[in-house]
Each structure stands twice: as C-alpha cells, then as structure tokens.
Length: 142
Image (cartoon, rainbow, N blue to C red):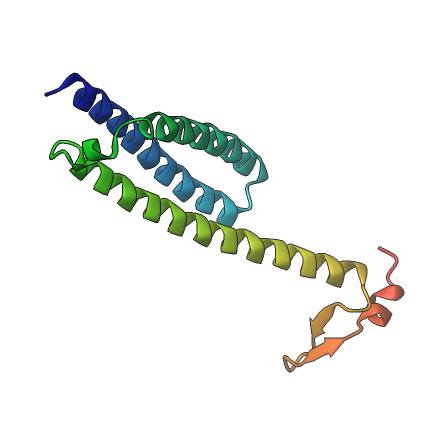
C-alpha cells in the first residue's frame, strides 16, 4: 500500500473511531435529557465539543488529499462508513434537539402554572383546558 493511501486510511479510521464515540455520546445525551440530568448534560456538551473539534480537524486534514485517492479500493469502504455514521449522528442529534425542546417547554409550562402567569394553561377535573388561572393562585400564601 502506498504511503499516502496508508496515511489516509489511518486518518479515516481515526475519523470512524471519533464518529462512533460521538454516536455513543449522543445516546448518553438522550438518556441525560430523559433523566433531566443537568450536570450530566454539561459534561456531555463539553465532550461533544471535543469530539466535534477532532472530527473537524481530521476532516480538514483529509481535504488535502487528491479526490482520486478516495476512489481507491482500500479507502472507499471507509468513506462510505463515515458517511453512514454522519447520517446516524445527524439523526440522533435531531432527536436530542426535539427532546431538549420538549423538556424545556414542559418546564416552562410548569413554571407558568406554579407562578400563575395570566397565559398559563391548567385543566379542570373533566380534563378541559382553563385559561387565565392567575386568579386561582393569587390567593396562595406558599
């Protein structure tokens, strides 16, 4: 194997390792979101930045190789694997973003109910929506 091809394969393999670790980290992030583990989310965010920086650096290094090199039979399967991992990471990240948004909305809505915002929503015993519950909680002393 040519030295250039060998070096490229090494970098692609490192990229695969980083993307697999990022995939695992995204799974952990979803678990932390589900558990509402704020400290865990902070730690995961720091790790994500580290992985993303590493992936970007390797990608920049790989961009210096001639395009023909990526048609090499030793290189092509690795680039295909990277593309699949990138899609997987993107999909997991989108799921996590939606989960984070829903968690944020739930907390905001709960906060509004508790402090009695005029636009907060609550429910009757029958399950009907009641708007403007500010009057309900105004007389609370707690």
